[in-house]
Image (cartoon, rainbow, N blue to C red):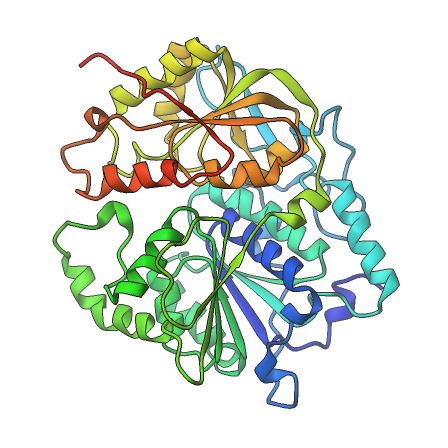
Length: 453
């Protein structure tokens, strides 16, 4: 019996809400760590009402690729083996753009789910008639960005192969989409005993928290934002993303303030409510009553690799330009200088980096631009990967050393020069980015690249 078939009549007592590929990866890591206990929270193991079954079938996200075309062989459907990847396996997870090409290639359909993951799922199903995640439903609140959607589809396939149910919601597919999404989830939210979320700053998630009666709340990593979330919760502050902090609240912020305040109260532990933070990030200010569990990427290391390690260097891109924190020209010069100094040949683009910026990077630096089809932790673990990975302050300086433990790959981080910041950058930006670098373990710190004014 396949994992999906084994869940046909099951009800979900744990709902996980994700909006990005990394959030879904960390839900899988959390579920792996907690094992079968992750499916049913302590408060629901004895009796209690059952949630209505979620739908895990024909979601729109599985029917088309990032460009609207159908993925080859319905990759990750769970009904047929994935096509074999070429040597090294990188082509199954990334789309490559030659350095001279004028436009970054979108993530292509290709085989998305590694064969070893499928085999692991089959072994677990064969050894036990009930899939490990039978009581966990992952709800994807799909964004509109094509690259993010493409990565989420492939991560959803991995989740299904692990035995978890996936419910794909076109949560932003038009003016009425939020009403349909929230209305369709209301019953499951009220009956769920545990809620797992990847982004407590998300207005969507905050709104859903006002509906649920769950006594167990779990926040899994959404990158460096987790550090700020825990600190704000400890200080009793309103929940605001770090790169926006310091600015005046807009009209929408003021309108949504009651919902945000309610979400913050829901995320504060009480006598009848347990809150867990599952994170690979350093957490210094821990609110009273919050349980912090370390994410060491055990699932990633168990399912993927080890990678082939090449002699060269790879570079990891960042969306700091797109979020208005770093000046685009300064960033371009810094990438050029780092690539030249360390012999980097490939640039792994962040899913939010703009095509225009990536075209310029390819033309002016000679780097091969890579648009990953899976989170970088999985791509790097599968390989091939350079012996040195260069990065600016970002989540990967914390996660890649964990995912690549024992492989001999060195992660090197270059600080952001204050001169690179834009006039509109949050006053918190420099301190926050320095903290991201300074608290990273097992990384090599590079001297800040100086770029001409």
